Image (cartoon, rainbow, N blue to C red; front, side, top):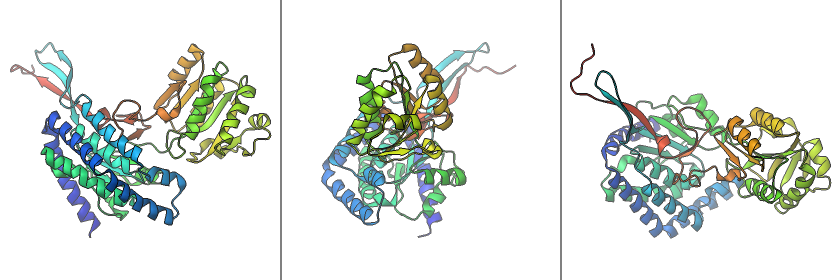
Length: 421
């Protein structure tokens, strides 16, 4: 196939579908979501079989453990997809909502209407659940979507695409409202990100290499984050009963996610008390601790201990490796975060209300938390139903991107025949 022609065909179809989606009523879009959820429940066994084909091929090709973790679609993950679709359907419909109405001296009334972005291209690696999350959010927000999943998940994505199409058809929505790119040729990505005449925004969800390539080559605007170098700071006023489970969960709940803690900062006053207890927890998971000199002195005897170098503070490990640094207090912690953070998610553990407020105000990241694991930085956990991605940027959308992030505002004016003098 000619990849450029193929992608341009998808683009033209998506543009036509986007107009139909923008005028479709909320009840119809919700019906499509519920029908897709029912189809996924019905075909759970077939989806598991398709996912197993992908996993077998990925293991044979030597895919990294973190990517294998993302690729896996166990029964619980299938149930989460179904639950996410139903949550999205239950959310208020943002499309057509008019706000900020004001009467002007001229007699006109001016307000803003929330509208879909149009056509959204989503590029992702080894995450079949994104196919459903992205389709669901785009349908609910009245957009059309072109989904380009990773070659590792091709069998599962094809199976999911059929179920999404089934739901759209039964609801009476255009089948081209969600199109899954049915080729693993990497040229499809290059075409998708350079079709501004058809695609309004690109949402990449993948490794640093993919995002870097898109930043270099894309001519379509993007909602993106490059990496997730997330920090937890344990303050000298921390409650250890909270600090220990938060710091353990933030690192060890899952290694291959962008909201996993990669650097632990501990206040000097509390470090001798908290670090040995945390080390005992990390040892059960064989986590390698790359620590500064002060932390190494406290952790002497820990079997998986290494010296931290400058690059460790800048690294997203996506593995059982954790950088550890002892700091004088909150000021040094925030200075470190300001220098090395990727602006994704940071957390403070403290019982000091003033320190917590300072951290919330001054730390410049998309999600900032008090006494909670960074693993909560997720659209599903935030009540968005699902997320189409995470944005570290400050314009348009920031943090987990749900329905509102897939819409825009346009001005609407109501008049009574007024003319400008």
